[in-house]
Length: 254
Image 1 (cartoon, rainbow, N blue to C red):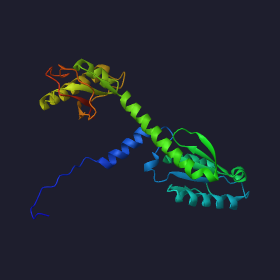
Image 2: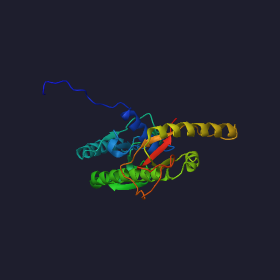
Image 3: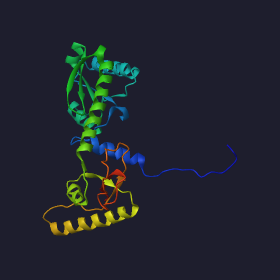
Image 4: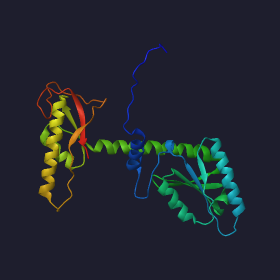
């Protein structure tokens, strides 16, 4: 723009793949993925419940009609009308893929003008009229999004231990927790902490032998949180004893 060359600034730390990995490991369960609705490529899967030739045409027609209606409400929908798989097989298939909502439509639903909707995250089921489907599904998805976020936030905070001395570090790490500690922000002290925690971890592993699985790895800084807890005047660094500057989050590096 000004006719001068300038150096660009960029980062390269695998943000996309790490974000996907964190999402999968945070929300997933023993059944498979649990995808938050806002990022799910398929938010609702419609599964027709067919019994031989009983109302087959009507059920499939209504499934397509409901799909069109939901798409007009900006809901991402797919119909699984494959004839070579049972409904039970399809339930499992889409649970593994983590689709937020499953919509089932069979002969009884067709007669009542309703559909059975099941949440992937909790397994709760709802009988919803066709007229109310779009607003109800949007409402359910917002509830799923909030619920997943709140559960993840609780899990995160439960896994952080606030400490004030180095003696508290290894017990916290052995509980597979992160450590929030007051730090002087001296780069040299971080190197010393890495070496010392690595050495202590290795000693623990040797002492444990084959009797138990012991986590190893040095502790390093993860970040200095923007949301800082109050730091009383005169607080010392948990490692050096120098005046602490900010609370810093630490964790094992593998």
